[in-house]
Length: 309
Ligand code: 13P
Ligand code: SF4
Image 1 (cartoon, rainbow, N blue to C red):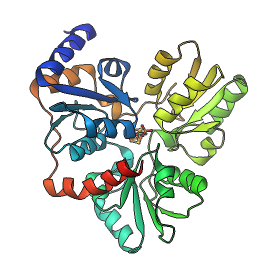
Image 2: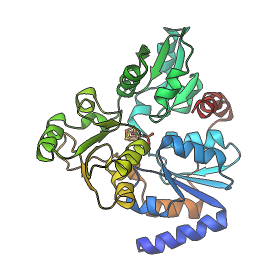
Image 3: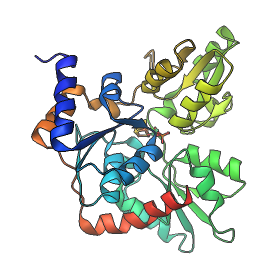
């Protein structure tokens, strides 16, 4: 069997022969982050996908992220290591139910979080990510009611930050909703010198203990810049890899979930492996395929997000 080093060199050779760019989210396993050309949060990955001149985009993240890359690059081939890498937030907002929800508020302005299917994006006025949600919502015309989907916890955080009232779709992420407030408080007591950094997909009882709330990139930038030396990190543990690379002298403690595990990993993100990454490049499959009409309909709200960011 190939070692990780063999796989890395084969992936690097395929990048050249295919003129491919490998994009990876911070929640990917360390080996994938290390071989990627670009590692980022959802917004940075969408921006990188929008301006790449590679012929092939290999997306190491979850399905909605690869879908976004395809919508922004309709003529390029988008490959992903595992087609089954979905997202609980996106799954919990089925397009038909969302359409019915939208029909109850026909005059509302629809802001959808990027963690949604292309079909839901196509029914939205603008898309946001966790790093630009506050900025985007601030730009919605003041006289419009806002529908926000699918993450209710991010939605509540944005309502607080902007002072705008929003009707929230009742969605949540299976990873971020299971952080244990009790265990977080225990960790804070054990490490009174640590700062708590959290993703806005966490529930309010957890978020109220946070010193900083932000997207994966926001959290990473914050811990690197902070004068503090110790951090309790309340998001998917893959992010610790870049923290250790960028500020190795600091201490990072992953906050535990309520399910008995020591740290919290997204089961969808972790379906991707270095082996599958290599195979998808070698075989040029699985490829992200999306009907033309859906791409067109979802492109306008995504482009509006990039303009408003
Ligand atoms: P970011 O946009 O902060 O990278 O978050 C993506 C995500 O899936 C969080 O669970
Ligand atoms: Fe989706 Fe949650 Fe995984 Fe992010 S961590 S990809 S929101 S299931």
